[in-house]
Image (cartoon, rainbow, N blue to C red; front, side, top):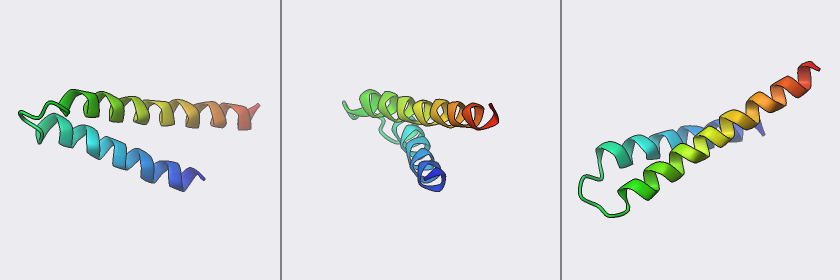
Length: 56
């Protein structure tokens, strides 16, 4: 499961970078950027919570 989340996270980070740099005049630029950034952040928070739960 963690490897799948890593791959999804890398894809979301790639989407964030692409939407920030590549989609210059596209109206979908900012929703894609914030969606990908929010998804990557959610995966990071989930992994940290799981790691804390494992240690306790």
